[in-house]
Length: 311
Image (tube, rainbow, N blue to C red):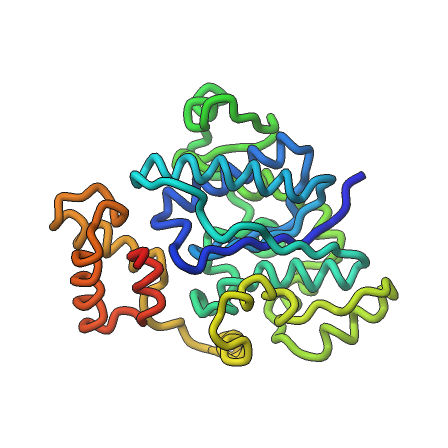
């Protein structure tokens, strides 16, 4: 029997994705894990240092293990790295009831907003926010070039499996709208107007009050409980929650470099100066030299520089 879960895993000391290719490969690994475990994805969002997702599965631990191991093999080979990627373990919350599920899915889709990466959920391409109500929201399009089954097989790791209805674009990543259980999620929201409203509504008491209608005996999902796995590794829970709430209210475009942009700058401009294949081949002194230069340019804060340089 498939149960519904919110799952989250993290990597605070180093980013898990350094560029768009990594993000795309992560989603393909997710698709392979769905197929291997008979699981279904309702919503997902990857940002460089953690992942949120809502899934229907019989085996949340096995599902995440398959996904993470497959991606880690790719990442380690690409960057000359060894060992597990990210903190061990994961956060699991079973979802029970309409409002419980709507809250978890909405918070998942808003993850890039909570962390100050984008001003709206729809700006971040590495989540499923744009997979639902596509016709009603003016997103009903098909990429110019879809890969054939033979081309899809060549683009995937050996022995990877996928559903025949999943489509892949020319860039080699499965199209989220063909993988995500959009019909299930659209039935939960009922209308595109409700979907637009809920994925944009600010955190607050209304979410908790509405979840009382589920009468499931479970505590309501709040921003703090949803981000529990992330908050376990932060210096100040209160400060981090305050920043997330402030990001929700930001009406402008987030400022500064996000992790992908900073990693791209490091990998393209700094790493080649030391004739290294990646940051993992740099010495501590070389990393500190890069960090000092980045900090002087004020492109990023200390914590972001440290995780992008794996300091």
